[in-house]
Length: 309
Image 1: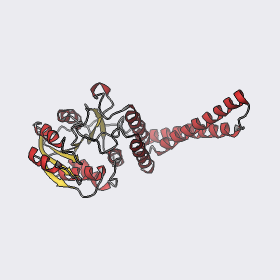
Image 2 (image 1 turned 135 degrees about the horizontal axis):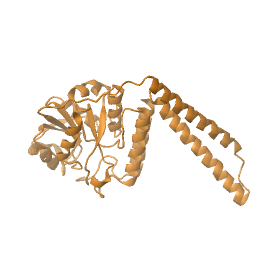
Image 3 (image 1 turned 90 degrees about the vertical axis):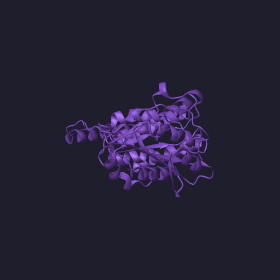
Image 4 (image 1 turned 135 degrees about the vertical axis):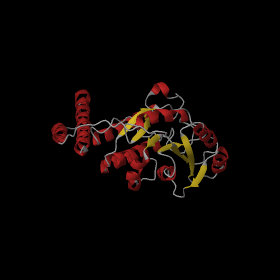
């Protein structure tokens, strides 16, 4: 359910594109009388728009007929004991501070750092700061995240996933904790700009791209969540919920974050976003960062994953 809405949206975009071509050709004809006739574009656009409207109507009708009463879960975690899984790749400069920040939180009972084939002193610094270090031989952000979730699952009654680059504030774990009593997983969003540092890696390009892909997921899983950010690693999940989806992850690259959200939605888990603060990272980014090409490639990987979901 929701797939037709997603495809209808792309048909709508295609119609807009063809109308744009038609308009551009009309301008050429008007100004220099040298454009070629593409009247068929307008007919194709009309059909695409018709498909879009019919697709949206059919999907909404189907959802209405199959609509179930929405219940509100109220399941507080008494005595929360959070086990933190922290990804790291050559984060020698930041990992010590990140571990110490989380160790200050009274709710955190365990911190495990995933050494994703670091060639610097990340592992050594993490151990000195008080974290357990586990090496993940499969290279990639997604592979490190999955290992972090598996290792963190071994302790506590809640699992937190986060990066070790000090972009996230450990104190924000209280925000995630406040929402978890109503859902299975809470994911952070870095789109509340009042609490996002202007010198962070959330550039206008990254922000717009994240929102666009997030809204595609929202279309695909219509009525199941409101989503504004697909690149935020910071999240809190119930162990029993993690057990339901941990075996369904097959992404090892940088597009793992939305993949995990969709895996949860497929299993009928309740997911909610929570605004978190975000600051400039310590050290150099190894993911998308401010790289336009990497961001574009990562975005297309995310879209492809959504289309095949």
